[in-house]
Image (tube, rainbow, N blue to C red; front, side, top):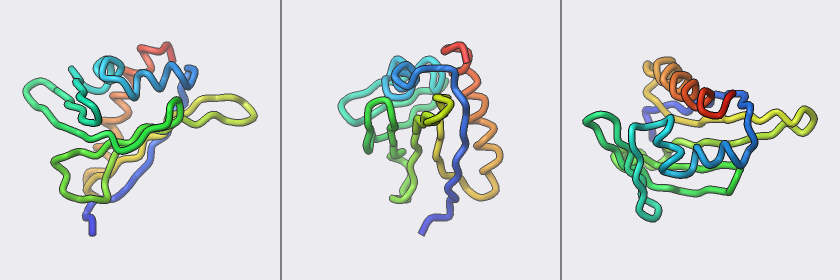
Amino acid sequence: MSDKVKYEIEFVMKSSASLLFKYLATPSGLSEWFADNVNSRGEMFTFIWDDSEEQAKLITKKRDQFIKFKWLEDDDKDTYFEFRIEIDAITKDVALLITDFADEDEVEESKLLWESQVGQLHGLIGG
C-alpha cells in the first residue's frame, strides 16, 4: 500500500487540444516547459534537470486527450503522473488536469511546483 496520496490540479489553457498535447507528449515539447531536456527511446523517457536525471515509462496515451507516465525509481506500483486534456462541452474551454502522487506532507509543495511548471507552459502557448 502506498504512503503517497493522489492529488489532481487543474489549469485552464488558452490552446487547442492538439497543440497542448504536443507539449505534453513529445520530448521536444516537454523540454520546453517540464524539464531542461527530455529524450525518449520507445516507451522510455529520460527527463534531465541540471545534474539530475530521471527515467519514466510511458504507460498509456490517447492522442489529444491524455498521457500517463510511471517514474522508474518509484517502487510503488500504484503511483504515476498523468496529463489529461478536457474540453468543456458548452464553453469549449480547454483544461489541463494533472494527476500526481506525493507524500502527504509534500502535496502543497508539489502543487506549487506544478503551478510553476505550467506557468512556463502558459507562456509558451500564449495562455
